[in-house]
Length: 413
Ligand SMILES: Cc1cc2nc3c(=O)[nH]c(=O)nc-3n(C[C@H](O)[C@H](O)[C@H](O)COP(=O)(O)O)c2cc1C
Image (cartoon, rainbow, N blue to C red; front, side):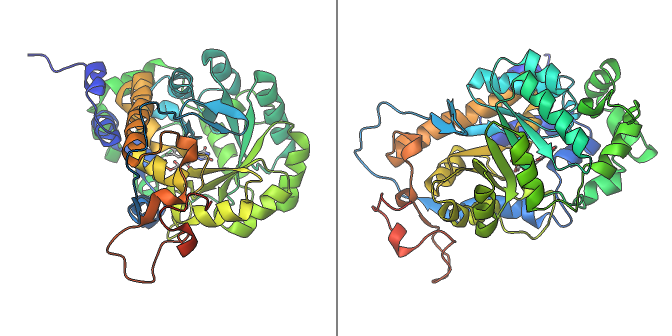
């Protein structure tokens, strides 16, 4: 009997972990490690997940949940569910259609796709291929002329919002990538060749498509044309340790649309970003890929929400794998969550169908959670729906829970 096709296997996935398992079988180790890895000991990666377990949901009964609503509005867009696809560079490593497939999956689901500056499909290619709303993620490149060019291209192509990532003053030390000798474009080394050759489908996708590179930089004057020249340029220029609040103010003056700052964890930084004109804060530790041993994103969320005080949308990013995670983040004050690895692994499992499966699983799980916690409208989740998880020693409640936020006090936000 023939094994079921990948498409049929993805249709049978019952959770994001099922999708990830399919991807792990299909992708070579060097790519799996690039996607799933984190900085140093990867305690921040684990911490992002653990932080969700620090909270339990506290349901209400007999609320009447026949009609449920997962729609929310974030950065001025109404989206069908409070889950956006965050920026993830070089998505074509996971599937030959890369960011185009992810953007199509987001559009199909009625949500937003965020294109990374370091994408392997260009700004224009994604805008043309995907019918839905896209946001553009920018790094604070040293070269301001390049930043201005990217901003013009994103605006001309119709990107609706800008997400400025501020947590990469230098590259995080991802030891899996260092050990694997991960390069752009991917190069076979004796230590990785055998594993790659055992995945002919992935290899064929790589071999028959255009070379994987930083597509937004191709053709930029003086930057070379080969993937390795662009890779070297990106490594040198993408990080900008000199960037400061003045750089944010400079950028704000150059982008008219909604602007979110991604990579904020401290309440004072959130306040300052809002004072500089940010419309959104993405509470994020870059999925644990930059600084290790850093505060989990969810733990930082309530402090940022309180500091922002409703003056900007707050998006939680990092470790979201379940509908219950989405509900907890919204209950703690997020307008929406953003995901990274789950949809990249979805691409790895089955391209656009895999990314779609990830979003649809989260939608189905969240819909069930709304019914089961007795809150039919996702945008009305608040701190009355969560309590610190049982078993925590007395006096060690997670940040954000206070007696004011006790069960039944729906007005505390
Ligand atoms: C393969 C990969 C590439 C990424 N590239 C970028 C990027 O180019 N820009 C950025 O701001 N964040 C990037 N991120 C971080 C994600 O946007 C997000 O912060 C993180 O993945 C969230 O954690 P999660 O993977 O647990 O959902 C990347 C993440 C992954 C997994």
